[in-house]
Amino acid sequence: MPPHCDSLDGPVVTAARKALEGRDIDQILPYVPEEGEPEVREAFSLTAKARTLGREAQEVADRWFFETVVRVHRAGEGAPFTGLKPAGLNVGPVIPAAEHALDAGSADELTGILCGIIREQVEERHGRAMALKEHATEEVAAARAYVEASLGLQVWAHHLYKQAIAVPHAPTRRW
Image 1 (cartoon, helix red, strand yellow):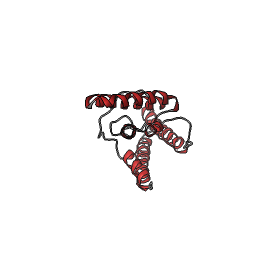
Image 2: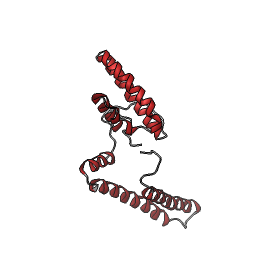
Image 3: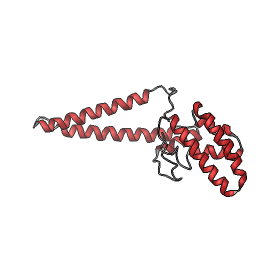
Image 4: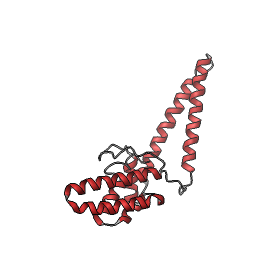
């Protein structure tokens, strides 16, 4: 899950706000799995009614609706709901770059960030293994440290490769 799907300024709550403001449930439904749609529809209907009862009732109802849609969204990812997070969380460079790529229609910035991170990690992991290799013949503990670092690099690279070649439209909802 992107680290901000459960934040008050994340894509799920943003879509939920648009749905409530525009009285259009279709704004939020793409963010919830099909099996969660009935619950979200009911919550939307109840929230719409409560919003007519004054400002305080609207605030409580909106918050409940946001919690409901985020909880249902997280369930669709197979993840627990741990509450709404505040807006403005630091999500690192990748999420904003991915959002910008989608808005701008160019993946150049995102590609640069990801390639840079991978390059740094490869160099760091490889460098550590090579430094340990120099002493691997001196004693068993040194050989173990080298084996751990070298296999760690290989396993990490393999997992990264498998993730990179994964079918982009797989049926699971693991955003």
